[in-house]
Image 1 (spheres, rainbow, N blue to C red):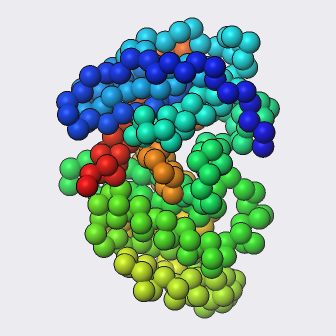
Image 2 (image 1 turned 135 degrees about the vertical axis):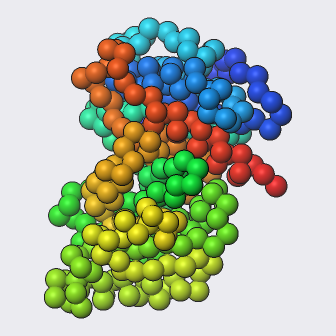
Length: 327
């Protein structure tokens, strides 16, 4: 899709002083009509509670730059002649620009409204837009809840994301499962520091098809994918039925699950981790995270939005970026 006009401001804004070894985050506000501005403000106010030394820079509103914690110009569609979709899109462009120029170690994005982005001429979603702006051939969408002390982490990669359910059987190929699993395995090793990741492939059909009774994808697609993945430096188990794989993973048997389509992964993940989840885009040349919720237009500006997921997104971005920068 064609891009909307680029931001005109090139000032970098102020940076928050941090101890040596801190990381720099480019933080966007998302759709200015939603809860993005207020959960970002709450997250930045709580930086001291996150436990990571962070410098926050970059675009937070209408393509401009962040100036100081929790100081935002007036938000709302139409400022500076921009609609909300264009405003959100320009901020994403600016964040990626900072990351690619090496002026930000990670990008944290607040929720966008997909129809508004599409109406402004952008890809209708962060994942697709980030892939295009970064110029990479493939990315992965991983939902994460890193848990608390003593609690296993929950990580789910969505092999297909925002597509109609009717298209899923044609899109779930052996090549897709192999490429997405390898993206995940590399990310678990380099960004999360897991030396020997344990990955489960969630089956497509009920009961993993029960030896062909409910479909043939497990035999025709999953079997060759598992054979191709067998020499890799991570263990891959599957196909594991959807009604058991998440329970097994979320109690510590696996480090991550590859889900074949959006809702089978998101339904399980959000049931177990809503409000704590973080969306991580893997396969980019920089770290990118976002909260696991949407714009929540119905509660925006009422002071009731829960910032927990945004706080988790900021904290995880800092942690992953620090690990990626380590020699």
